[in-house]
Image (cartoon, rainbow, N blue to C red; front, side):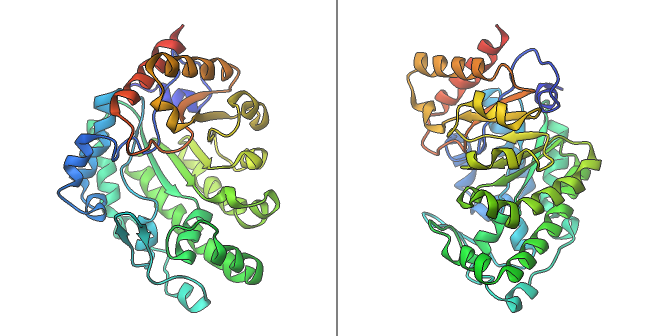
Length: 339
């Protein structure tokens, strides 16, 4: 087992900097497209054999130092009782939104093994195949709440912020129910064999720091505190969260994920004695080989004082990225960090 990723999460000395990429199992890989062409996205997420196949693809093809479970953050919302659809070009759709207590009362806190057993089976199957650590994950409560409130993706999050400011009790009740469900979901992933757990907070960067402190952070802290007894490394990624870094460092996570909007050296100083994960702009993968290697070299140098560093993109790899560019990045990180 190549445990370099786990060592970096724990702040231990490593022979080189480990690398994986958010959305590394996905649309940029022709091998993924071949599998995806046979089934819908939700069918893929719920078919363990196919999930195993696509999870393994970037590890085998590109040499990643960790695998991340192939799934979606909204699988849990569906298990809670919110009917979910995915539409090409529109993304996830919840036709029944959660905007009043009656709608919220229709959501349950599900038994994770019963309602999302396909996820746990995927984890068990992957552990038999993998020679690198497996990352399990969930969406952080705030991000998941936005989808339920808005009915899908949003640019301005009008309904979400309206509920926060005008009906804070309802908003907190929704966050509490998502939090309780997420704890059970991630605990089940840990029991099934996940070796690290990440919370994705894709939309929390829309919040001012005081609103983050009031409406989002306490729920992240509750989840991570409940997961501490597992002994697994815990990662918190707040996208577009440069203004929230010091607060994110109080989340209870062992590793703070970083987007690309701040120099990594500055971010390291701000989070203190925490490992960091990031933070190459995903579009930097489009650079010519020599320029990409040079940019990676500078990032590695700027991260030399980190308590631990896992190289990653600042967000998910873009679907039109040539796979050979991702391979150049993986090889560069391995080679340059060994020097």
